[in-house]
Length: 137
Image 1 (cartoon, rainbow, N blue to C red):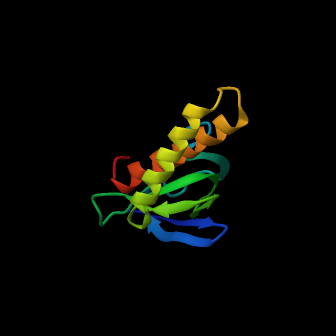
Image 2: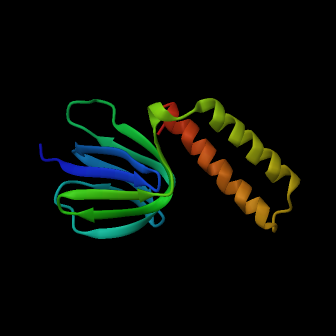
């Protein structure tokens, strides 16, 4: 089966690089599925998971991303993420603490407060990281 080269990069450096059969992720406009030969495009990413299907593996590789951009070219997909972690690299205890802190901040803040929105985003990132670490995506 045909493959497409995928690179996931953050400001701290590369996180993932491999040839895959399919890339599946959540853009701000909705779910995207990318196969080799896909038309060129650029899309902003939402907080979510990037699923990378390889032919030799039954389970896709999972990467938690916290926003960024996806660039598709016919033979390559580049994901420029604000932060990205492979499932096996996620510190579950740290993600649990971040989730608890965000939930606590949301309880203490008013809905129209800017800090409430920041806490809400922090909670989304923590829940996403926990789900990816457990392979629930």
